[in-house]
Image 1 (cartoon, rainbow, N blue to C red):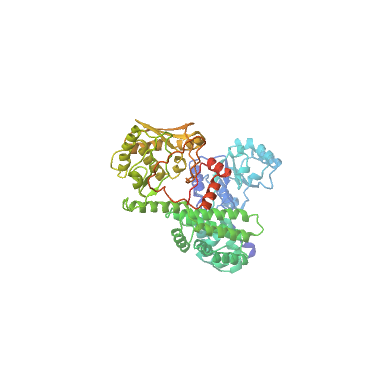
Image 2 (image 1 turned 90 degrees about the horizontal axis):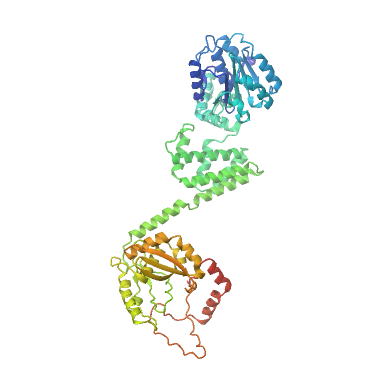
Length: 618
């Protein structure tokens, strides 16, 4: 009985085109070529092990040399077809490229091609693992391969096409055989089990098919081994025990505790797999594959899912609904990095545990989508608030340095929280809006100009009232720009209003602060647009650097002791000051001296200048 026993891989080898599984694209092309008499003189079959390269080559040889052939439909039990299947046909020569790879063997082959076939229509040379031929052997074969006799056909098979000379490949019709889908292998295993009277569970068949990684021959060999070990009843636990595979349920369970951010349970499961003698690298690969399935179903709920059992598919759907895409991608990236480190690490378990902990931490980190969602929600909530300027606390803005002229008017503006750059609503401080007094040396003309300025600023509290101009326009524009882009405050604090004549609106920077002007100039177009809206007409914004301007000191304004008059000078009369926000009690001497010492430090001053910064007193 043992003499007649055949392993499943040989007993259930495909005999006709209809028996070949998972390679429909190849079979359909060959059948059409035979039926339409468009046969090539050389074929190259490429694919992983166990995908049917040799079987397809023999079936093609049967179709070419069968009685009445070439024909895609033939009797597999015909004597000629049986001789070809068993490798005994004189007209079909099977050559092992690994052991016959020298130029001498190729020369012998080249000498025999001139002889006619003995019984069939063609003399067929099948060279398996053709990539093992040497370069000299390939070169010796070139001329014969390109122009063989009419009765000669070449069929090559290889798992590594990149090792074949391009001149050989260009003379062949290439067919790429794909890995066979898991569900196709599982179905065929169940068919074999039924034919052999074996009780094979569906879960066991899927476990075998998954472990075969697309190779039908590997799957059949595994089933043969299981029958020898288990007898006529095989379940999934037998498959996992013998081959060290990981069950889909175990992988899904490990993925579940990772998604639930249970580090302790995840480490316990890794420890259990390690103690059971399982390959941790294989476990990590299966885990990455599981998260890949979760990601696919998350992105496309209608994706093909025929390669997994129904209960596992339901678990994957639930996990996909519980996590977002960004976090899934981050988890897969971290596990893939861990997989790369584990290949060369002596302590694989340590790297596996670290990778899992990192993945769990990544799930709890805020993603960019979370930040955007939070900002959007906050903005929506702010828009929903009532626009009541009196109820909203004003936001103070820094004061711009007045232009270097003898007459100056200092104005402070405040905005309610719900103001925007496109629709500012500056509100004049009560203390300043009452009146703006000129310095002691101002003329009557300047007083009139300031009187014209005051109503414009006062009316700014109501956005519906007329457009701004002059210094009031600058104050309103600066406030609106900073409110829209807070980074503007870094540069606008040193900007000085120079003039507003017609459509020309000019700002200036001192020479020492030209770098600030360069930074701000990138935003000139949008600044001009916002200022035009406030002015009620088109504005041509000019930002200039002038040597005569006094640089803005980027430090806290402190009250200074009046300086002693120089010899021969009369003490200057102090201008009366209105009580306002700036008229505060001086701080105690010790903290003030400490603050002044800090700000006068040369390193601090240099840092403020280099980084265009300012000190804010909290």
